[in-house]
Image (cartoon, rainbow, N blue to C red; front, side, top):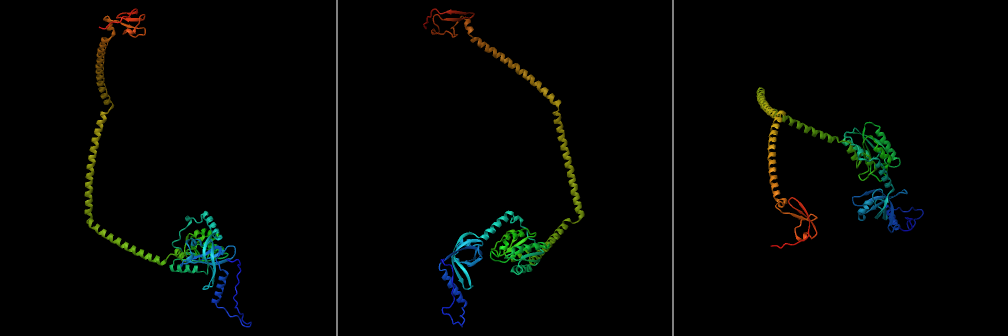
Length: 468
């Protein structure tokens, strides 16, 4: 943008008319062209402008229309972003409450006589002051539980009186009345309120309080038509949100259009995209219910007739099967006699079986009587004692015989027998036997064991013997 921001517009003709004649009037088109030419001359290059986005409304053509607001001063300008310049990021950026920095030129749109800023680029500049305040209030109220799903109440199925909080002169009450009278089945009670501007929040709270004091009111619709974020500001006020949350009857929020979201929508028990939809949600459709009742009645009548027809057929079949009641009774009596005889036979068989089992149990019990058991054990003990004595005697005799044979073998092998035949055994002082020439030396003391004596001798001379 140029350094000189002051603009001057000169729409006077080049040649002033005579004093006594008025200046020729300009046509609207000439005036529009003059204004457009002055703007084009003043802004020959693109400028950057920053502010808070309000009243954002995307068009079906792909263009973006919104307003840019100065939070510090009471200033507002319309902005358009043409589809050729719109990117997904720019579309996500230009939403109500966002603070944006735009590049473009101010232009005068002659068909509507409107001054607007045609932007070709957008950058994020943080959140707007209004959106930040709303977000802080939303977080605070959510922390208190005012938006909790478990607080939501179901709308009454058959409301008798529907309260409406909206402007007396707005289109909302007419839309609600039109839908309610078309659907029928409920009475409307209007509590007029100011829905925008200074004092709107207090007026809405007062209207809610008035409706709650009426005992017949079953549900309340709080609504207004669409508008900018400033127009809907009353429905973001804390007092209004708390009044809706504390309402004794269910509340339906119908503020703005489907894209408009206010804090009242979170506190209400239900949200409608439009006031007409709110009326459809609350007021039951009398014609649809009448048709449903007629269809239900028809289905019930047909079902009843079908059930009766089935009952008649079943009754006829039963009558054929039953025939003469006396014969039926006689047949049942015969069946009873047969079952009585079978029961008596079963009882006799069971009794006989029980007696037989009792007899066997008595025999087993007698066999296991202590006296009989002791007598059998004594006889078996005597038998085992006799067998044990015989086995002990035989084993003892076998041991004595074996011992005698072993003693005879030991006696035959005893060195004393050898000595008895005239032999002797010589041993040294250390007890080792003298078996060879090297086992003793002259002068050694040796001991000689004969059959009946022990001799101590000294070796005088050793003479080796020659082998034969």
